[in-house]
Structure formats: structure tokens, C-alpha cells
Image (cartoon, rainbow, N blue to C red; front, side, top):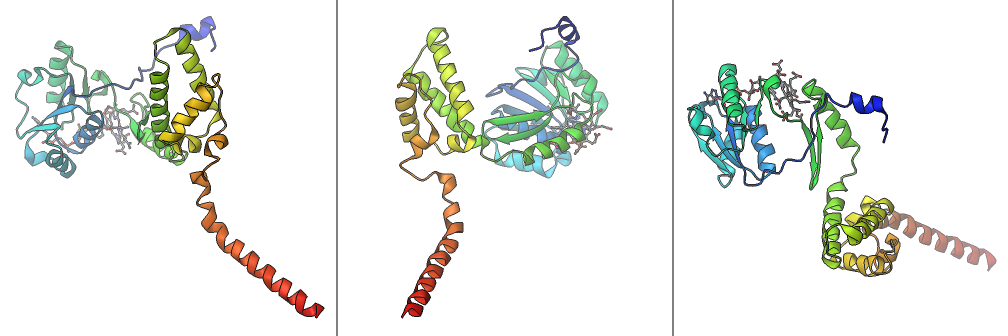
Length: 280
Ligand SMILES: C[C@@]1(CC(=O)O)c2cc3[nH]c(cc4nc(cc5[nH]c(cc(n2)[C@H]1CCC(=O)O)[C@@](C)(CC(=O)O)[C@@H]5CCC(=O)O)C(CC(=O)O)=C4CCC(=O)O)c(CCC(=O)O)c3CC(=O)O
Ligand SMILES: NC(=O)C1=CN([C@@H]2O[C@H](COP(=O)(O)OP(=O)(O)OC[C@H]3O[C@@H](n4cnc5c(N)ncnc54)[C@H](O)[C@@H]3O)[C@@H](O)[C@H]2O)C=CC1
């Protein structure tokens, strides 16, 4: 880390990137068009409880489907926004309206109550912005241009997605399970045990590939902990663990090499029989 005075003095001008936990929190969404449908999906992903206020005449088809399919999470009011009382008990407010004045008023009401608010049409008054998202299981990548170029954020998302292997989500899920197992075996917060756990996990993540992690099953994890963590905090090579079974990623190679192998054997047999005939 560059700890120069110049750098530290120049810190600023961005926004805080955090993974906001919204499970079972109440989110009010005003407006039901296309932008609202995207907001609903984002907030559903975070397991929030949504109250949607929007006349049914202006609903986007995707918003309608979300209302129909997820009544467990979306309370829908088929009407226009009625006033300040709608903000009672709400943890977050999102507006996606074609009415800029109403958007302004809702932002003001939210601000008075200190409720975090995003108005899709008034960036300068938002408490936070949405961004382009890449998701694969627990992996969440957000691309933000801090309000400058949302289309560029979308295009960068497409490029980044193409650079991912597709194994990330599965591998991270397995790492999550393994970390929990390790904490069960070696419980305790902070101190020496915390340092040892972190050192071992860091070493393992540095040594193993995403393929190695994604192929782990429950039994492998126990062996990894028995033969690695328990054996003087050693980092086993993936081959040690997978020696008894073919590595899943090697399996698809077999069907491709099979025709070549059969061809080789048949060719060799033909050659041997020709040589044998010539000898006679
Ligand atoms: C500030 C912000 C507030 C917020 O909504 O949180 C905001 C504001 C505005 N967007 C507008 C327009 C467009 N928005 C998009 C697309 C997206 N916009 C998103 C986010 C954000 N948009 C936040 C900052 C994002 C950041 O910091 O980078 C994305 C990333 C995520 C999402 O919406 O969930 C999503 C891509 C998702 C994906 O593809 O994955 C496109 C392109 C398209 O649709 O492909 C266009 C048309 C082209 C253009 O205008 O650039 C206008 C109207 C401008 C006008 O009237 O001229 C405003 C209001 C204004 O700027 O005044
Ligand atoms: N942040 C972003 O990514 C983007 C933001 N925008 C902005 O987002 C806003 C919404 O865009 P769209 O969804 O495309 O618009 P839209 O016109 O499809 O949707 C507007 C919605 O607001 C509802 N509405 C209108 N008056 C209402 C009231 N009094 N109470 C409750 N609901 C009411 C309508 O019924 C409709 O469902 C626009 O202001 C646009 O400028 C547009 C594109 C991208």
C-alpha cells in the first residue's frame, strides 16, 4: 500500500462499495415500469420484503410477472402514491417514476425520515446508485461509474463476464462450506486460532485452482481437514485428495480421446498382421 502523504490527502471523490444485507427489510418501490422491474429483481435477490405502489395501467409485463409469481415477497398496491404515511416502517425507498416532481417530493420525505433513498431520475439526490451486476451464486460483482456512464457500466459487465470461467460460483460455495467446517473444528474468534485458520485458508486458496475447489464433495472436505489442517496445518496438493477418483475435469477428455485410442489399437493390429504375413 502506498502510504505517501500525497496519496492519503487525495483520497475521496468515490462512493462506498458495500454488500448491503437487506434480508426481511422493508423496501418501498414507487412506480412499476421497466426500471422498477429491474429494481424489484435486485431487491428480491437480497431477500427483502417489497411494497410496490403503482397503478396497474402503467405496469411493465416483467413487473406483472414478478408480482404474480412472488406474492411471498411483494405486496402490491394498484394505485398512485398517496403520501408520507406510505413511508411508515420502511427501511429503503426506491422511485422509478415518469413524474420528476413526485420523485423529488418522495426523496424529500425520505430524507426527513432519514430513510436511504434512490430516485432513478434524480442522481444528484440519491443516497446510493445501482450498478451493472454479474452474479454467480455467492459471487457478486457490481460495476459502477459513479453516475457518469451507465451504458459503459453495462458494456464493461459484458466484457468481464466473458473473462469468467463459470466455475467461480460453485468454487466459492465450496470454499464457504469448508470455512464453516474449519470453524467448527477450530472454534474461537480472533487470537492465535483465528490467525492459524486465516493462514491455512489463505494458503489453500493461493495453491488450489477454482476447478480443484469446485470438484470438492463432503467426504473430500473432511479428508482435506484431516490430512491438511490436522496434520500440522499442511496444505495438501489436490492430487493427493483426488488420487482415488478421476478428477471431474479430466473426465470429458476421455470421450474425445476414445476414438483416437481405438484407431491406434486397430492400426497397430493391422500393421502387426501385415508384418506377420510378409514374414511368412
Ligand atoms: C445514476 C444512476 C441512478 C440509479 O438508477 O441508481 C442511473 C441514472 C440514469 N440512467 C439513465 C439512463 C440509462 N441507464 C441505463 C442503464 C443502467 N443504468 C444503471 C444505473 C444507473 N443509472 C445509476 C448509475 C450507474 C453508474 O454509476 O454507472 C444500470 C447500470 C443499473 C440499473 O439500472 O440497475 C443499468 C445498466 C444495467 C445493465 O445493463 O446491467 C442505460 C443504458 C441501457 O439501458 O442499456 C441508459 C441510457 C443511456 C444513458 O443515458 O447512458 C438516466 C436517464 C438519462 C437521460 O435522461 O438522459 C439516468 C438519470 C440521469 O442520469 O439523469
Ligand atoms: N436508473 C436507470 O437505470 C434508468 C433510469 N431511468 C429513469 O427512470 C424512470 C422510470 O423509467 P421507466 O421505468 O422506463 O418509466 P415508465 O414510464 O415505464 O414507468 C413509470 C412508472 O411510474 C408509475 N407511476 C406514475 N405516476 C405514479 C404515481 N403517482 N404513483 C405511483 N406510480 C406512478 C407508472 O404507472 C409507471 O409504472 C424515468 O424517470 C427514467 O428517466 C431510465 C432509464 C434507466
